[in-house]
Amino acid sequence: MEKVEELYDKKVQCPVCNQEFTTNKVRTSKLRLTKRDSDFLAYYEGENPIKYNVFVCQHCGYAAIEDKFHNINSKEREIILDKVSSNWNKRSFSGRRSIKKSIEAYKLALYCGQLLNFEKYNLANICLRIAWLYRMKKDNNEERFLYFALDLYKEAYYNEYLNDGTMDELTLTYIIGEISRRLGKKEEALNWFNNVLKNPEIKNNRVIERMTREQWQLAK
Ligand SMILES: [Zn+2]
Figure: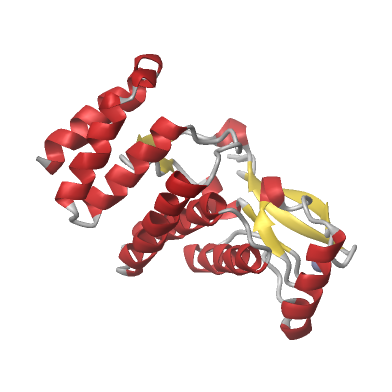
C-alpha cells in the first residue's frame, strides 16, 4: 500500500550566510493528536512536528525557531558569523530527525538566542521544548531544562511585556504554576494557580480555568 510521506522538504535561504539548505516539516494533514500533557506537550500518531520547529543552517550553524529564523538584523548577523560560524563543524539537520538530533537543534537555537539577547520569554519557550523532548525519551535531563524554563518564565513574568501573541499573561501564570508543580515546589505552584484564578480575565479562558483547577487539586 502506497503511503504519503509524513515529512516534506522545505528549501530555506539562510539570512546569515545566504546559502540554501533543505529542512523537513511534518504534513499537517497527517497529524492525529493522541494526547496533551498538562504543560501543553502534544503527542501525535507518527512524527511530532515539534522535532522540526528549529531550522539549522548546515553551512554556517545559525539556528532559530522557524518563525524567528528570518528575523535577524545586520549587527546580529555579525555576532552569529563571529561566535557560531567560525567554529561550526558542517553537518546537516535535514531528513528525519531522531529525538537526540532535535535536542541538538534546539540547543543550537538556544545558544544563538542567548548570543542575540532574545527575550527571556523566548528562551524559556526553547528550554520548555528541550524538556519535552527529553520527556519523550524518558531522560532525566527533562528536570534540568524545566528548571531553566521556570526561571526564565518568571523573569519574563516580572520584567517583560508579552507582545509575542503566542502566550497571554494567564497562560504564562498557569505554566509557571504547572512547571513548579512538576518540580515538586508545591507551595509555589499553589500560589501561581491562585493568581490565575484571581485574575478577572479568567472568565474569557475556560480552558485555562479548568486546567488550573485540576492541577491545583493535584498539587493539593
Ligand atoms: Zn547559513
